[in-house]
Length: 142
Ligand SMILES: [Zn+2]
Image 1 (tube, rainbow, N blue to C red):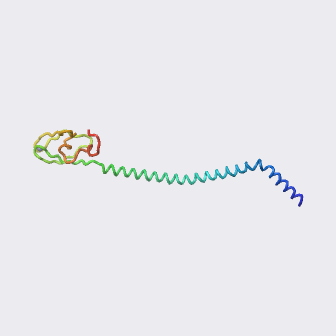
Image 2: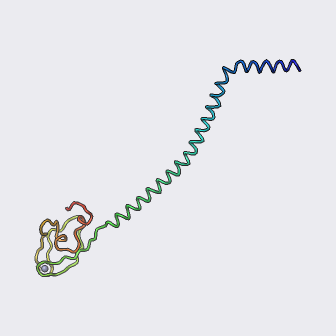
Image 3: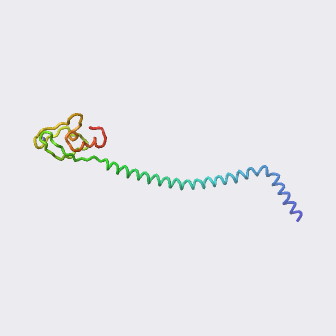
């Protein structure tokens, strides 16, 4: 009994005596381990956040995409314009080209060839009820 106690005592003393060497190592080991665990836990937490964030961004992107599609649809130019002939007052609804401006327009009634007046870029801007598509969309005119 005493023999065992002395062995335990001496080993405790030995451990205690050498604690200056292994204690910092143990603390570092535990600390490092817990830090690593904490880090991976954090990463796991963050990966959840990132996933939510990613999904959120995806949703936002889709929302924005939808919005842009809607707003661009809303911004779509009116292509129907009724031209009133300044010579005879004849009205005719015409479909405007979106890719080009119509500079000349022949009145189907009096055969007068109309040309834009002033600074206008096309006959629709001068004689039509609706300005030409580029003007409607605030774009530079052709
Ligand atoms: Zn006319």
